[in-house]
Length: 115
Length: 114
Image 1 (cartoon, each protein chain N blue to C red):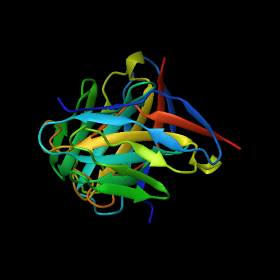
Image 2: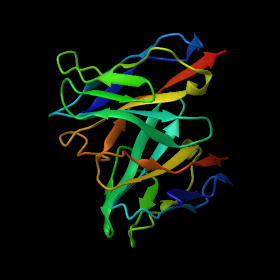
Image 3: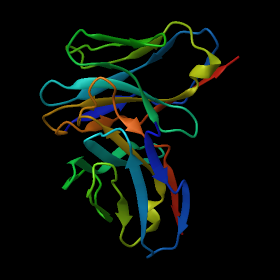
């Protein structure tokens, strides 16, 4: 049981470059989400999805794009990277939006640096 | 909008000391409340939860009681261990303001010294 798998673990981008952070889960969870973690800011929700074909914006969606073509995958795209997007990104999944009895399952994170 | 406020860290304790991490919340409706823990280099894990007023969540010696009258969900442990060193996040989920998505506090880093 792999849980939530995020790739890559580390990435350095130049300003203006684009890239996709991958997230895959094998638990048949309907709900998936992306958070960014910054020092002193906690975790902030970027985008989320309640099922294949359905996505919505969270608290800090600007500069990011998502799609959900399958239940398993929920990639996060940075359209034109900016230094303000330097952060640690976490993907999370769950059976329901609130987490139910087991809470969210988090990936181990992608540490992104934009120079 | 919905929000979670937790005590600033870092918190440094000696092994076997008593731990309290304060958490208060603002929410529309009747939120569910959670504590998550993040060990170094890892993602977050659910530690405990409470879904209604006066519920007590507990796990691994940690506990927290949902206090509606004080809008609080303070985390406590009677005797901490070095292995409890981690960052602790208080979170809420409300079908009102957050539409059910989890909203996290800023986190409190705990270091336990032998």
